[in-house]
Length: 261
Image (tube, rainbow, N blue to C red; front, side, top):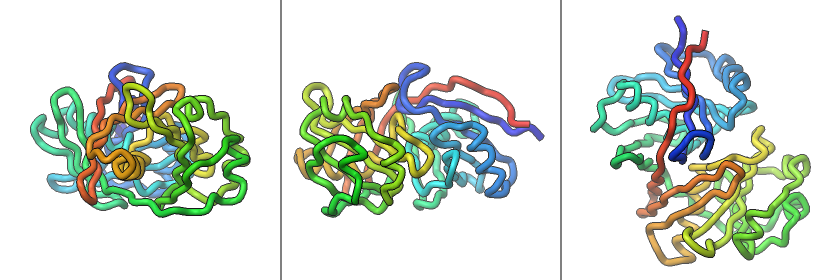
């Protein structure tokens, strides 16, 4: 039977902005190798596979190269598809069982808010080759269980970064986020690079904000923050830090509906 397939721009209010994700709605389980093949075929940062589990859903995420433990934008896209396709009642929360535990998404007017685990960081020495690969002077360097976070001196430095992705792929980490305090509308800005996982630059990264949110909360002394990921497509993320949880808010737009044959 054909499998419903959607492409959704997450953390976006209009098409061709934010971060695109593919969403497959499965009626039965599929082998890991098949899901990896589909993700490679879609060739997006992440392809999400959603399968009903009673009143809840299972959710897995694949890049073109690997399965990942946590992905924000493809979770937002998956919830958006469930509501838009009437697979979930408008006033029900989307509850996803994942490799990072139970993740929930609530509708909030035209936007959605995801309940994710906070990722605390600890100071770390910059791994060999990181500064050269990024081509900038490193400020504070910390590490979460997934990624390195590098603070640089200004928003302009973040926006003007031109990493050597081949060199960055040799750094032993899932990804590297580079961030600075915002100088206007936004509390902080960031970019996210993960060439070792098959993604040179991710347009808008929900999971990175699970780390960026607590980091900037401690620096700025506020629980609620407005963030901007300064990729070419760009995207706005509303961040609310509450203890061991981070709530990430944003919108999504469906740009494609089809069937996987």
